[in-house]
Length: 315
Image 1 (cartoon, one colour):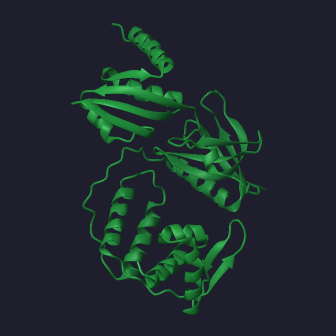
Image 2: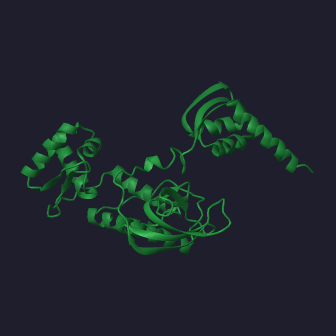
Image 3: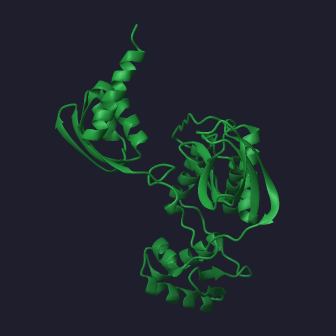
């Protein structure tokens, strides 16, 4: 891509995404970080005002008085918008769908172009959220954005009683179709994750109490690589046979999975699964089609569970 095209793309990113660091711009433009300062200088010569924000969280941002020319959508971009509408419309857990569709209509209108109908059918089995849960999620977003502490009446999995907590919301998470709020529990002085569930969350309200967000907060320190919770990693070594072997071969299982066909419909799988419960659940889901080689301790635990299951299912 030539220099002029890169400058225009940089201008578009600054206009649509706001403050961006040099490193972020370089990654988006697939160019060297050193080029970003030169692109900024050339854009300023062309009449665009770009402000430099110093410091650790600084970068460049386009001043609002700068007017951008409207760029036409490519065929690939039109298809991407079309597929995104189809995909998100099939997911009942995507709360801002109506706002998203309005935004797409504005893009279509401003670009003076039609967008093709999606040629892919997306289906999701995610359960629809109740109006009460939607309201709680929206309130949590508001508290996060305005730095207000929340009062949450919550019952954990291991408790029989609801308890009122003061929560400073940091992030809203959607993992495997369920919503969670990650925040700082001001009563126990720890970061915790709470699930939006009618069985667990009785109510949440905004308090007048404000909080200051920790600038060193890193979400990666609080959630796992493949799921919600950070947990022990288990290296799984197993052999899968039959029709399930092909299904597993086509799937992404765990972290850094290695797959090798030993024979027709016989697959050797090595992978890392986060959390013992998740590892046991995965291996048990394979039934008799799976032979666990390692780890031996997990193999023994699964064997004990199978013995108990057989007792429960005796006629």
